[in-house]
Image (tube, rainbow, N blue to C red; front, side, top):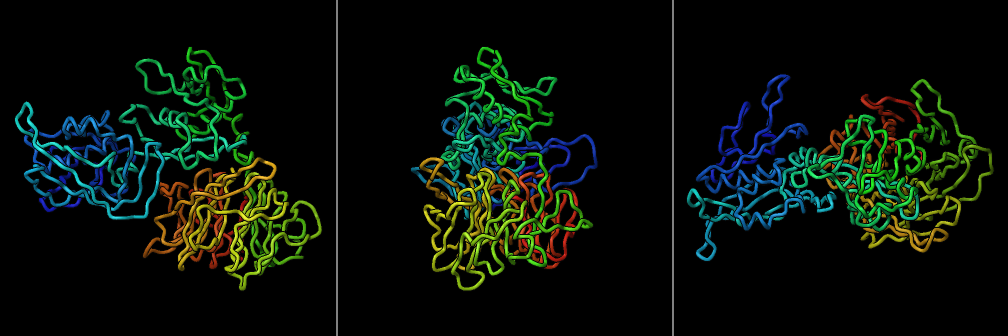
Length: 618
């Protein structure tokens, strides 16, 4: 067991349940049993347990068409080598054509075989419709792509083929790739970030992909080796235009004969043998290659990773890099530094809560015009170096930039909105790791996304390609690496979250900046109220699912859900803020409770009763 439960089809199939064994011929998989702990019944439709294993069982002699279809669907959920058992349900010709590694179709629950249809004289056999709710696809690059949930209907066809035991039913036509319910997908796969360099810069960008939890059935590689191979294969198509790999094109692993996995030595050093493509690279390039591997696998292994050693094809050393050395390539070069928290206090000034502050700590007003009361603030954004901030006036009509570490005059506003009414003016500002400042003007007569290079130059409109199709930008959050942007878009009374790619053309001096290929980031939510970056490829969002109540939850930037991503309940949340350092607490503004914080493993704690617009630098 351990696979999704399957509804009873018209043919009268029942999925047998077993606690201590797999005796039913209708089962094609059986989870291994733990040898410690209490024994209790588990429904297959419960959330997947990553430690549950499914062992495929081949078809019995004289298996009926119903058994063949059910057995094959079950066998697809296993880790069987090269899916050999799943292939035993197919004709030789169908097995030869089937490429399970090329794509995975993810349904909300396991595919349901519908009523079989007998074949015709020109096409004898049996056809079964496979029914479900399509929610995502994982492509050959391991990239997760959510889709607007829609009905899934494909056909699987069986025919009788002569074999050593007489005529046997086998599948001769089937959908491409793997077909899995969501819980089977979560049990078999895990998300991992590959890392590449932002184009023209020595800054890492996360590229999330899904790899197998244990050994890959086709390559027989463990997760660490899968991740390194996926890294060497290059960035996913969506991210590729804005990142670069320091590995020479075509570089691959050169594992010893008979081995399929990379190993750690007794000093927690991972040795990575590369083929001839990388044998002649210089030390500087090699160190950047090693940094890509370190960032990619640092959260994957149970062993404590200390160093990565890259080897030439002849086994000699190319270079060695330690974990500490790689941190210089973090997106804002501040990895490991605790972030301060900022908010707009009851007197509409910018206030600071020092990192590690508790409810007993008094917030301090920042230095300069944003903290001394000269300007009533409505929304703020603090630069990542924490030397400057951008603030929108209380009526959201004007944007200012000023120092928060020294006294200075309040300069003229850098942007003014002419929107009629506070809801039609400027959004909260956002800083990227390059020091550029972003804000949206929500004026219905002239809506624009604007960028101020280095937070100081004249604002420039940013073109969005292919366009917003009538939607209006409500909120802007730019990633620390500066190549991805999260936008809340409102259309027809509904606000959705999309992620765009930030492209720069024409050189560093005066680039033309565009946002391209917007894609859904929270398709499971009917409406989204607030968003913040919460790590290299993770967002925290506030919103509602259809028919549900408000939730605060984590999601991946590729639109996939995060295990245990739904956070403790909090009422009337209007804004949320997270640090790029995932160990830092979440901060939110609730109309009921004021400024609150969520430390790891705890519940929400009130920090300041009177205040709004909490932010971390960024």
